[in-house]
Length: 308
Image 1: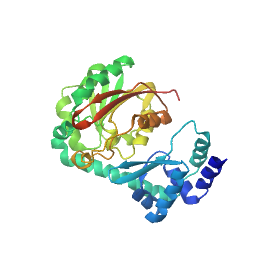
Image 2: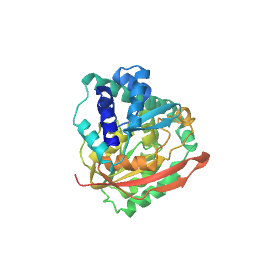
Image 3: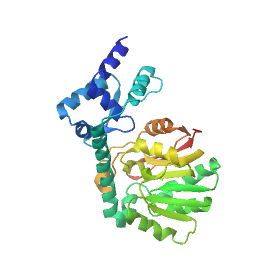
Image 4: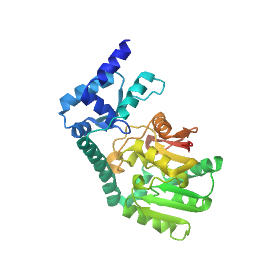
């Protein structure tokens, strides 16, 4: 009874309800939420404290900032039902506009970094892990799932090392990146491969057509403005039964990567990625882990698209 009353009382405020609605597919910092809802920080922090005490939101530290997301527990029927009811509602258009502004700021920050440092990409990559470290495991996973060898998509192909391996396995391979300078680096490596096509485009802007048998995102999700939305878009472009392979950093506290490598997020908990993928429509496989230089740990996760 105390849990029921506490949770419903916490939701029983227009601003708090709207905060939970905004957190449907993303996490936000306090200052970002202040902008989205045009609310002073002291008041916003109070509302977040109420939601946190009611176990409706969880928080995590990203460098010097605290980010909030919904408290995820599929077995918690009370909160799951509350979230489902909130998701039937729509945010005010002004709130939606400011929410998109936050995403755009994140996206531009990442894009500007890669535009400026494309020439030093290999040096930046070497600070954490080069593609040849995880590429064999990625290809082993694709063979393990016996993915149909029609079409594959790699997001953020970098120097094109993994893209070349995918081109040996699939009839057609697409490499997509929103930064022209980075795609030029990729083009140098794949220029002699007739089955590789490069697209200068945002991944989330791709048409929602189920055309790919395999999607690979290697060390790119921590550069994305909205990681949770990435999984929803991946589900929309994968064929039923298609394979999503994600190579990512596990959670860490090396804040220097924000400036040195343009990272927006300090890695992810494996369960965090797993929950987002399941919520988007995927069945998870067994994660694999690789220890890397400077104390980083890499997770390689596979997800199979469920039939809609």
